[in-house]
Length: 186
Image (cartoon, rainbow, N blue to C red; front, side, top):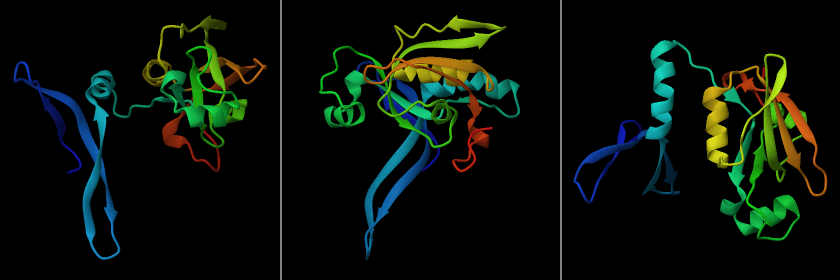
C-alpha cells in the first residue's frame, strides 16, 4: 500500500527496525486486466531522521534545490558514462558526475550539463567563498548535505570538468517548491 512503515526483521536478533516510510506505489495496467506487479516508493529512515528536527520546529520546511541529479562514477552504468562524457569506461578516477540537469533550474542556468564532473564545491558565506570539503563525500552525501544544511538563496560555486575544460559554475540555490520548468527556480 502507499503510506506506512517499511520494516525489516533482523535475522540475527529478530528485532524489527524501521527502514523507511512508504509514500506511493506505481502500478501497471494491462489492456484487459490489472497486473499484480507494483513498485513501492519509500523515503529512507535515515532521511526522515535528518528531517524530523526541522519538521518539529517549523510549520513549513524548505530545502535547497540544485536542479541536478549526481552520481558516483563507479556506480554509473558504462553505457551511460560513455554517452554522457564521450570518454571510454572505466573512468580514470572516481568522481561525482552530473547525470541529469533540470531545465531552467539553478544548475542549468549556471551552465552545468549532464556528463560534467564535480571537482570542488564552495559556498558563499558572510562575504567569502568557503571550501566545502567534498573529497570524502559520495554523490548522495553531497546532495544530502546541501539539501539539509545549506539554506535556499545561498550562492554555490562548483568546480567542474567537461572534457579538457575546467570551468567554475556559480549559482544560487533555489526552493524546489517554487520550481516550475517553464519559469525556472525562484
